[in-house]
Length: 572
Image 1 (tube, helix red, strand yellow):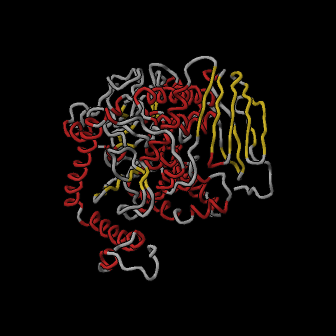
Image 2 (cartoon, helix red, strand yellow):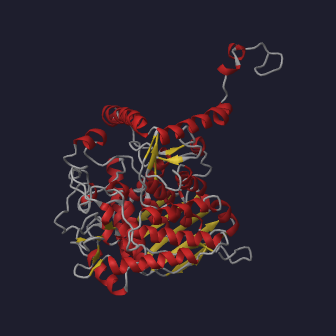
Image 3 (cartoon, one colour):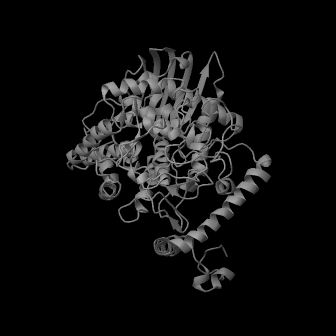
């Protein structure tokens, strides 16, 4: 008899009781939800007990990864695969092939761009997690060592997935909302533990960037279920993280994501500053971005955006007036009781640019620091502490470059129309990281701002617990935000974006790209783009879609339409 026919003899498995033959469908529909609910209950009710169990669990996984894979088997592991055929992608419900970049030129080594660009997507896919006991929604680990759903990591990871697969990008952000604790979006949720803190509030910003410019109907369908929770989280921040002067504070340095920065702690974290009295320029800027994002969503959903815009404008003014140090020409944390500035020249000092909080005179002063080699214009730009600051060191948030806040600083330059400066600094950022990947076959959490390599970098030197659990160097296979270099290629250099349902390119290649050709394939968009950079203000662009092939000669920052005007394109 053929297997599966009605008259076939029952197999040994078929003869077992029903409870012994649980199908994958039954597992997904019945058992997984039960386990998720049980785990959620334990996370909320037994934080201390489960915390101990989870730390042991994480330690076991870390030991296996660090000792077995990173050390014993590393020499036997081949390079990270950079080809991702659809049969592999479909294992995680990814339905479209990854974008592809090919760079060519008569002068200079450019092969590392192809390799690094593909490597980002390979590691990004590797770190994507399918629905499991933790979550019924796909989510992303920033790196194998960080086994959880992290708030601001997820916001940035979504921006890397955006041009590859918008469905995945949406899942990666919305899962943070799904795992919220009351109205608070949690810093991290993993295994049986949940954080009592929040983290930089960038999920609304990420979701607004993901859906702004698309058709109203599709955008509204995706955002409507999330909007009430995001509004409630915004109100929660105003109720729980707002000072009497209207600015915002971090409950603990770990909440900021930049915990061992000199503005907050000693290098080894043996001493922490009390942040509850400090009006923080970075958190205040993030809340501006959140309100602007909620205003964007409100317009899409036919709601009133004015309350959010009013909050954003009010907060911009308060940052401008209260956190500006005229003598130094930077924004600083400021003690609400004493009025004292914490005069530590960190990346937070320039992040108000991202939120549009700098006045005209303040912008000129900030640019002195941003464009100075002694400030934030190091060979690999945007160190986490200014190069000439006395507290600068090559230890995590005390000097190394982190791509997420560098990305934010670049967005700030663009916001103020400084496109050429943004493109030049972004190009150096991408080139360095792609070059490092080609040499080491790894992406990392943070990078040396002055040299290629890890030799000079440390992780909270002197902190024995961190050395034991996470090692003394930046974590590898990290694209939680390092992968934003691909987003810069697509959005900054190619200038691919949407407006009112239509697609455009707006090339912004810096002088270093002159003489090179960039072939960019975006399968998720059914689109191929070729850019030949003829000069600083001249790019020949070829646009190929299933229905057309168009060639145009454009200047720096000049826009070229991919889609023709149509009555179907609704203005949002």
